[in-house]
Image (cartoon, rainbow, N blue to C red; front, side, top):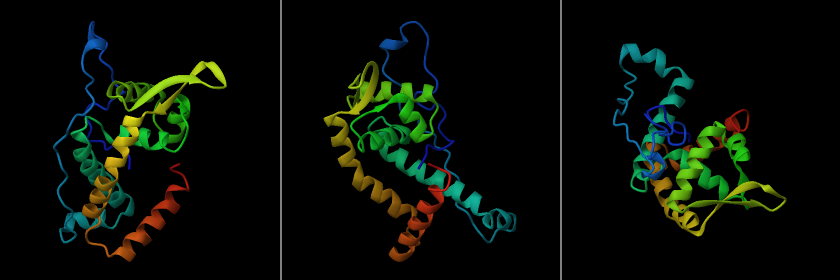
Length: 186
């Protein structure tokens, strides 16, 4: 899941450069309340869009992002922060350029996201073991604890999104999405 287009001020992408801004609290979570209406396949004007798989995937992505961001809002994080934390949980640390390349985020966005995660105590920058001039981003114990607490929430979001599907259908959908993602989204 990637961050939805409904985010009005993605963290890390637009920084406040006014004097004194560095002492302000991070503006991490912004909530956009414009939830798209449900798709009604019986509406004549919707039939063409409903027949378009790409559009349906787009709508599901938006809804999934909205549901997960609503859960994350209490923590002050957005889905993009969560993706960085999840990636860091799989390794011993990563250079910011590696995070950018692996997650598909602009390098300047990664700087802001890591800044936000550091302020919350979920990640920290450390000297790279093989090059002291470089710094790697590592997950802290607080970051690991946060991720443990989000596992059930992620399942609830998925359950809500996929309510109409039987368990076998959910598994099939997941398998197909992994295959599609492996063919160009990674």
